[in-house]
Image (cartoon, rainbow over all chains, first blue to last red; front, side, top):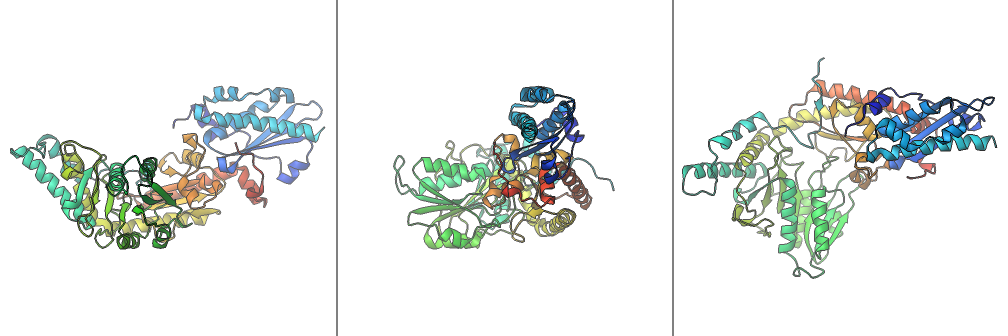
Length: 132
Length: 412
């Protein structure tokens, strides 16, 4: 199956790979929100972390790790790029369709973009819950 | 070390034609193009001679009599003809009724066996699909345990196409003969690689394919036993009565010549080729498993084809692994592109966890695979797995001692 150039670019040079600490550390950090979505048996697991500047309320940094196909990796890499510098509300507004469009994902890979949107929402919710 | 890219390591999917096969075929396209059914001129006789010779070459490879070979378009057709043809011939009741007879097969068979069985189920036959053992093998005892009074047909593949594991075919055949049950084996991956003797291996019906053994695509054969017992099948394709009425249609003379030559070459070189490929396979498996932890070689450790290995790599996903290895042609256990999100049903049948079944590679070597290619592939696989593990949240969890099977995943 042919991948778009953008998917290949993200896959070959994924942006913002990593984590802000061990699972334990990031759970304890109140300025970090984590989204862990997908399931190993479905062949896709995304972990998205946002670091929020507590003074400005902006997402100052984002990192991801992904177990999944090339499109899943590209979708999560793109999500971290888009999140940086956004407010939480702006982050919540990112739609999977925008990811589909940006990466020219074929129909069979739309679930990858849905997963990325879920990961974004889940990371922001996690941050909000920690700071409620 | 220079290696020409891309490297082809997907010989279980198909093989290149041996140039000697192509040479044998060429005259039959343009010079000796006669229809073997033309009984009254030399063009027809030349065609018939060619088909007769090829029939003998195929028969010799599997220890059959040439009269027992029916040419088909490949293993899918051979399987359909054998399974549907035998079921309908030995049916206990006529079409339209229920309980027409019991058929036994295995859940990790090729779809070209499973789908005909499903069709027969809709047409009033009972089908039992057994699970293989965790090492992928199927034994005589496993078949014996599900045989019923009304069992008419057992179909078990000789070697599995995804993991290369082979089954107790001679023993299962013996059992079937004792019980008066027809025994078919899909030997597509086995024939030409391993010594075969349908007589002493107790096989009644055997499917084989040209393009898996360095012959052309679009040609295969079905062996139909003529003695002890004489096996009868009902033809699927009707017309001019070719192939003794088992398979009507003008013979694919060029393809049949190619298949015959391919069989002859396999018979000549099989043992030395197997020895060489086994060395390469062991080398590759050692390189990869020495360098990477949490890997698993699927299937039986020894009872498997020498040229094929199926390796699962924990914490990485198969399709992205293939993407990283785009210069190496292999198969992935992942069926992600089919949109089903289902990992390999063969690996699942072995009880391989979903996480590992999603990240397996089937690597199958062939007649022209070199040590340099295998070493290069090994290095590339190690590099790719390491790269993807660096990206994988599951690998982090593993390293932190978190059991990923204990997490409540939201399946999507």
